[in-house]
Length: 225
Image: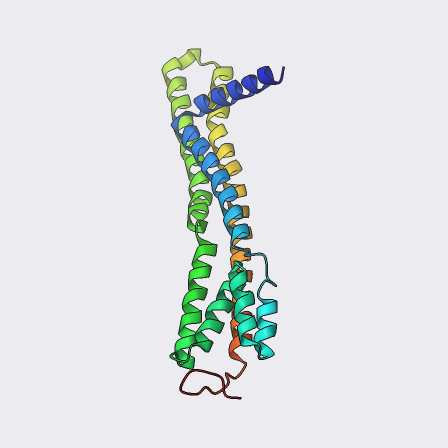
Protein backbone atom coordinates (compact mmCIF):
# COMPACT_ATOMS: atom_id res chain seq x y z
CA UNK A 1 0.00 0.00 0.00
CA UNK A 2 2.79 2.37 0.94
CA UNK A 3 4.66 1.50 -2.25
CA UNK A 4 1.60 2.21 -4.34
CA UNK A 5 1.11 5.58 -2.63
CA UNK A 6 4.75 6.51 -3.20
CA UNK A 7 4.57 5.52 -6.84
CA UNK A 8 1.40 7.59 -7.29
CA UNK A 9 3.09 10.58 -5.67
CA UNK A 10 6.14 10.26 -7.89
CA UNK A 11 3.93 9.91 -10.94
CA UNK A 12 2.01 13.09 -10.04
CA UNK A 13 5.27 14.94 -9.48
CA UNK A 14 6.65 13.79 -12.83
CA UNK A 15 3.44 14.90 -14.56
CA UNK A 16 3.66 18.29 -12.85
CA UNK A 17 7.26 18.75 -13.99
CA UNK A 18 6.31 17.72 -17.53
CA UNK A 19 3.54 20.32 -17.61
CA UNK A 20 5.92 23.05 -16.57
CA UNK A 21 8.38 22.30 -19.34
CA UNK A 22 12.17 22.78 -19.28
CA UNK A 23 11.99 25.60 -16.72
CA UNK A 24 10.14 23.34 -14.27
CA UNK A 25 12.73 20.61 -14.80
CA UNK A 26 15.52 23.07 -14.03
CA UNK A 27 13.70 24.24 -10.89
CA UNK A 28 13.23 20.61 -9.80
CA UNK A 29 16.97 20.06 -10.20
CA UNK A 30 17.65 23.21 -8.15
CA UNK A 31 15.35 21.93 -5.40
CA UNK A 32 17.37 18.71 -5.13
CA UNK A 33 20.62 20.69 -5.14
CA UNK A 34 19.30 23.03 -2.43
CA UNK A 35 18.33 20.14 -0.17
CA UNK A 36 21.73 18.50 -0.68
CA UNK A 37 23.55 21.77 0.05
CA UNK A 38 21.57 22.40 3.24
CA UNK A 39 22.19 18.88 4.58
CA UNK A 40 25.87 19.04 3.64
CA UNK A 41 26.28 22.49 5.21
CA UNK A 42 24.66 21.45 8.48
CA UNK A 43 26.94 18.41 8.61
CA UNK A 44 30.06 20.46 7.85
CA UNK A 45 29.30 23.15 10.43
CA UNK A 46 28.46 20.55 13.07
CA UNK A 47 31.61 18.55 12.33
CA UNK A 48 33.73 21.72 12.52
CA UNK A 49 32.15 22.67 15.84
CA UNK A 50 30.91 25.99 14.54
CA UNK A 51 28.14 26.00 17.12
CA UNK A 52 30.45 24.90 19.96
CA UNK A 53 31.15 28.46 21.07
CA UNK A 54 32.63 27.41 24.44
CA UNK A 55 35.01 24.78 23.02
CA UNK A 56 38.08 26.99 23.51
CA UNK A 57 37.18 28.19 27.02
CA UNK A 58 39.22 25.56 28.97
CA UNK A 59 42.30 26.30 26.85
CA UNK A 60 41.88 30.08 27.17
CA UNK A 61 41.40 29.81 30.94
CA UNK A 62 44.53 27.67 31.30
CA UNK A 63 46.53 30.07 29.12
CA UNK A 64 45.46 33.13 31.07
CA UNK A 65 46.35 31.30 34.29
CA UNK A 66 49.88 30.75 33.00
CA UNK A 67 49.56 27.01 32.38
CA UNK A 68 50.89 27.12 28.83
CA UNK A 69 51.46 23.41 28.22
CA UNK A 70 48.02 22.53 29.55
CA UNK A 71 46.44 25.24 27.42
CA UNK A 72 48.14 23.88 24.30
CA UNK A 73 47.04 20.35 25.12
CA UNK A 74 43.42 21.37 25.71
CA UNK A 75 43.30 23.39 22.50
CA UNK A 76 44.85 20.60 20.43
CA UNK A 77 42.44 18.03 21.88
CA UNK A 78 39.36 19.77 20.46
CA UNK A 79 38.61 19.92 16.76
CA UNK A 80 36.05 22.70 17.14
CA UNK A 81 36.68 25.89 15.18
CA UNK A 82 37.30 28.20 18.20
CA UNK A 83 39.73 25.67 19.67
CA UNK A 84 41.60 25.47 16.37
CA UNK A 85 42.23 29.19 16.53
CA UNK A 86 43.24 28.93 20.19
CA UNK A 87 45.69 26.15 19.36
CA UNK A 88 47.25 28.18 16.56
CA UNK A 89 47.51 31.35 18.66
CA UNK A 90 48.92 29.60 21.72
CA UNK A 91 51.35 27.57 19.63
CA UNK A 92 52.57 30.70 17.88
CA UNK A 93 53.00 32.60 21.14
CA UNK A 94 54.92 29.70 22.66
CA UNK A 95 57.26 29.56 19.67
CA UNK A 96 60.34 31.51 20.68
CA UNK A 97 61.27 31.97 17.02
CA UNK A 98 58.13 34.02 16.34
CA UNK A 99 57.63 37.65 17.27
CA UNK A 100 54.35 38.89 18.71
CA UNK A 101 53.37 40.35 15.37
CA UNK A 102 54.19 37.09 13.57
CA UNK A 103 52.10 35.19 16.11
CA UNK A 104 49.16 37.48 15.43
CA UNK A 105 49.54 36.97 11.70
CA UNK A 106 49.57 33.20 12.14
CA UNK A 107 46.43 33.30 14.29
CA UNK A 108 44.74 35.59 11.76
CA UNK A 109 45.65 33.19 8.93
CA UNK A 110 44.06 30.25 10.76
CA UNK A 111 41.03 32.37 11.62
CA UNK A 112 40.54 33.29 7.98
CA UNK A 113 40.79 29.63 6.97
CA UNK A 114 38.21 28.62 9.59
CA UNK A 115 35.80 31.34 8.43
CA UNK A 116 36.31 30.38 4.78
CA UNK A 117 35.28 26.82 5.67
CA UNK A 118 32.23 28.14 7.54
CA UNK A 119 31.14 30.20 4.52
CA UNK A 120 31.82 27.50 1.94
CA UNK A 121 28.72 26.77 -0.12
CA UNK A 122 26.90 30.00 0.79
CA UNK A 123 27.49 31.51 -2.64
CA UNK A 124 25.73 28.53 -4.22
CA UNK A 125 22.70 28.99 -1.96
CA UNK A 126 22.69 32.70 -2.74
CA UNK A 127 22.74 31.95 -6.46
CA UNK A 128 19.88 29.46 -6.15
CA UNK A 129 17.78 31.94 -4.16
CA UNK A 130 18.28 34.50 -6.93
CA UNK A 131 17.95 32.24 -9.97
CA UNK A 132 15.00 30.02 -8.97
CA UNK A 133 12.37 32.82 -9.12
CA UNK A 134 13.79 34.01 -12.44
CA UNK A 135 13.50 30.51 -13.87
CA UNK A 136 9.93 30.38 -12.63
CA UNK A 137 9.14 33.70 -14.27
CA UNK A 138 10.78 32.56 -17.50
CA UNK A 139 8.69 29.40 -17.52
CA UNK A 140 5.53 31.42 -16.92
CA UNK A 141 6.31 33.84 -19.75
CA UNK A 142 7.05 30.98 -22.16
CA UNK A 143 3.87 29.21 -21.12
CA UNK A 144 1.78 32.33 -21.56
CA UNK A 145 3.26 32.87 -25.02
CA UNK A 146 2.34 29.31 -25.97
CA UNK A 147 -1.18 29.72 -24.56
CA UNK A 148 -1.87 32.91 -26.48
CA UNK A 149 -0.37 31.45 -29.64
CA UNK A 150 -2.88 28.60 -29.34
CA UNK A 151 -5.63 31.15 -28.74
CA UNK A 152 -4.68 33.07 -31.89
CA UNK A 153 -4.58 29.90 -34.00
CA UNK A 154 -7.99 28.79 -32.79
CA UNK A 155 -9.56 32.14 -33.77
CA UNK A 156 -13.30 32.27 -33.20
CA UNK A 157 -13.33 28.68 -31.96
CA UNK A 158 -11.26 29.65 -28.88
CA UNK A 159 -11.95 27.49 -25.84
CA UNK A 160 -11.83 29.53 -22.62
CA UNK A 161 -11.33 26.39 -20.53
CA UNK A 162 -8.32 25.36 -22.62
CA UNK A 163 -6.88 28.86 -22.33
CA UNK A 164 -7.37 28.86 -18.56
CA UNK A 165 -5.67 25.47 -18.36
CA UNK A 166 -2.70 26.75 -20.31
CA UNK A 167 -2.43 29.80 -18.08
CA UNK A 168 -2.45 27.90 -14.79
CA UNK A 169 0.08 25.42 -16.11
CA UNK A 170 2.30 28.36 -17.04
CA UNK A 171 1.91 29.88 -13.56
CA UNK A 172 3.08 26.61 -12.01
CA UNK A 173 6.70 27.49 -12.71
CA UNK A 174 6.46 30.80 -10.85
CA UNK A 175 5.06 29.04 -7.79
CA UNK A 176 7.71 26.32 -8.05
CA UNK A 177 10.51 28.87 -8.36
CA UNK A 178 9.35 30.68 -5.22
CA UNK A 179 8.96 27.37 -3.40
CA UNK A 180 12.65 26.67 -4.01
CA UNK A 181 13.92 30.22 -3.50
CA UNK A 182 12.26 30.88 -0.12
CA UNK A 183 13.85 27.91 1.73
CA UNK A 184 17.18 28.60 0.02
CA UNK A 185 17.10 32.23 1.19
CA UNK A 186 16.11 31.18 4.71
CA UNK A 187 18.92 28.61 4.88
CA UNK A 188 21.38 31.18 3.53
CA UNK A 189 20.38 33.65 6.24
CA UNK A 190 20.74 30.99 8.94
CA UNK A 191 24.16 29.81 7.78
CA UNK A 192 25.36 33.38 7.32
CA UNK A 193 24.26 34.17 10.88
CA UNK A 194 26.14 31.11 12.13
CA UNK A 195 29.29 32.21 10.28
CA UNK A 196 29.00 35.73 11.70
CA UNK A 197 28.58 34.37 15.21
CA UNK A 198 31.65 32.18 14.69
CA UNK A 199 33.63 35.22 13.52
CA UNK A 200 32.77 37.09 16.70
CA UNK A 201 33.72 34.07 18.80
CA UNK A 202 37.08 33.74 17.04
CA UNK A 203 37.81 37.43 17.58
CA UNK A 204 36.95 37.11 21.26
CA UNK A 205 39.13 34.03 21.74
CA UNK A 206 42.06 35.62 19.94
CA UNK A 207 41.76 38.89 21.85
CA UNK A 208 41.77 37.14 25.22
CA UNK A 209 44.75 34.98 24.32
CA UNK A 210 46.86 37.87 23.05
CA UNK A 211 45.83 40.08 25.97
CA UNK A 212 47.96 37.96 28.32
CA UNK A 213 51.62 39.04 28.38
CA UNK A 214 53.98 36.30 27.26
CA UNK A 215 56.72 35.55 29.83
CA UNK A 216 60.26 36.48 28.89
CA UNK A 217 62.26 33.54 27.59
CA UNK A 218 65.91 32.64 27.78
CA UNK A 219 68.10 31.67 24.87
CA UNK A 220 66.79 28.10 25.00
CA UNK A 221 63.19 29.29 24.64
CA UNK A 222 62.27 28.41 28.22
CA UNK A 223 60.08 30.72 30.24
CA UNK A 224 62.07 32.68 32.80
CA UNK A 225 61.22 31.83 36.39
